Amino acid sequence: MTDMSNIDGEDDYCISVSNLTKKYGKNSPYAVDDITFNVKYGTVFGFLGPNGAGKTTTVKILTTLLNPTSGSVHIFGRQLLKSQSEIKKRIGVVSQNPSFETNLTVEKALDLYGVLWGIKDKQIRKNKINEILNTFDLESIKSVKNDELSIGQRRRVQVAREFVHELDLLFLDEPTVGLDPSARRLLLDHIKSQVKSGLTVFFTTHIMEEAEYLCDQIAIIDKGKIIAFDTPSGLKQKYGKGNKTIELTFNDVPDELFINHLRKIVNMRRSDKDANEVTSLVGFIGVHTVTITANNVEQIISEVLQLVYKNGLQLENISINPPSLEEVFLAVINKNDNSKDNKVNL
Amino acid sequence: MSLINNTLLLVYRNFVAAVDRTFLIWMVAFPVVYIFIVGYAYSTLIGDRGISVGSITVTYTSFLTSGVIGFNAMNGSSAVAGGIVWNDKRNGMLQQLLVMQFSKVQYIVGNLITIILVGLISAALIMIIGFPTMYRNVNITLWSVPYITYALAMGSVFFGSFTIILSTKIKSSEAHSVISNGLFLFFTFVSSAFYPAQGLPTPLAIAFYLNPLTYIVDISRAGIFSQITTFTNVQVLILGVLAVAVFVIATRSMVNMKV
Image 1 (tube, each protein chain N blue to C red):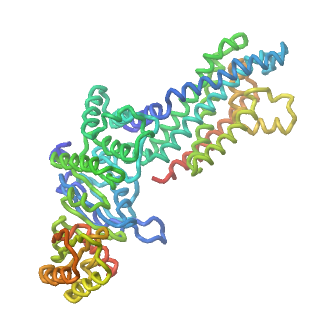
Image 2 (tube, chains in turn red, purple; image 1 turned 180 degrees about the horizontal axis):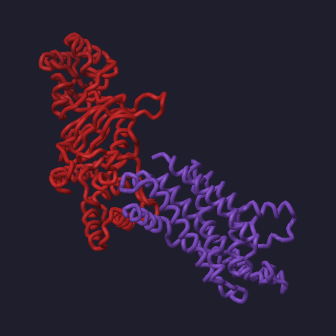
Image 3 (cartoon, each protein chain N blue to C red; image 1 turned 90 degrees about the horizontal axis):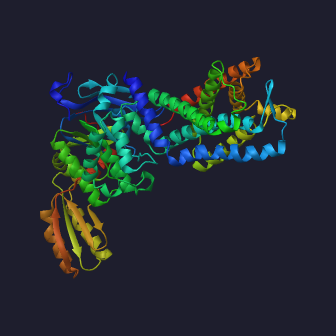
């Protein structure tokens, strides 16, 4: 990675976005609507949002594929529109859609990528490729052509090839789509180790566990606006409002009558101010597990247990968990649906 | 400097990604069948009469080989251009190249250089392989070399660009295959590559001269046999205009490709 201190024009932030907007047509709505945020060097910035929220449009602007309608973007302290070629040499991009050279084997494709990045020495390229094949567990498929790979294998190659060149900033637009759990963990761990060495990552995902595992800061975007921004724990504190989830796993499937009684207890104990903070108070995981989300679980737990025993149900397991990032995400998005202007400028 | 460097890198990439062993075999085997099988089979039918080219008469195999040289420039350039743009669009590589240090202008110029090079190399291969069949009639001079090179280069630009337009406009691979096969069947057989235009029924002769392959073949053939006339120069002009026009349309299509 480049020594940042020696580069003219660097400032405190790796990415600095100010009042950015994007409209695809004169009469179309804003795909990105006046967003402002900063990303520190050596951190992972999570950019979360539902489908069509403006995540990919933002990534495309930051990676020079689209021009913004208005606003400014600085990367490595330089204006993106004026210093595109210098900036592009130092970034890597894993886009949402797959990209590959159909006719080339994995090894040949990585070698070509090295050439395109200007690594002229064949031996240096070979060493780098061997390192990547090993790191991303691609050794066994190095002689397989790209069009013969599975979706997950192709995705791994797509991510791996970005590490052929020296980069300071990596854009990952839903990079784990199609990866199995072990490949996903391998990738996330590799990114974590790279971040420790100074890499900055701009990360979009739908998978909240990934965001929680990887991100230092998270911005939630909806309808083109950033509606929440904080660290993962900060978001939980701010939007979880002390909510916790009780998970009750039964030996038998609980009947409808029991569920109705449970809803009554929870609703009686719920204060109005909580209404927007959680998406559903009583939910299900499979058919044997019932979840209850509330900010006063300590108060209702005894009533819930009494109801369980009264109905003769046998509990296999009971646990009380803090709110997950997914619950926070849903709460924030629901809250935004109910209020018209909820922009957060950072 | 980086503009030239980046463009050359993209040309290298096009060759590595699009030209494989199968492509090379196809590029040589197909025309060789025409030259050595069709050429000698039809020669038997035609007998010793020969075919008129300008003021001279050449054997049918000489006539055919000189036509297949232009035909192969068309084949090579259109196959490689179509393949590159089709795959880059379908497989996300255009977007990936544009987030690297490459610009769309470099991508377009890189493709242009690639199609010209592939067209010239394809033609040169056939010229070498087919030389024994026409060496008695060949009369290449310093004056005729620019005509041959121009015809093959501009022909490659025309057909490469034409295929790029098809690749950017057509959505499904089935439609792409049917349309391009149909059009190239016309280009191949309604041209002077395999038989002379003289003496044909008027509608068919007109159709021949609506086909750019006829101009490529006529100009390069005139160069190979040193039979350059005023009409050859008119054909040079027409081919140039056609190639530039189609390249401009292809460039617009590539600029407008969504990423």
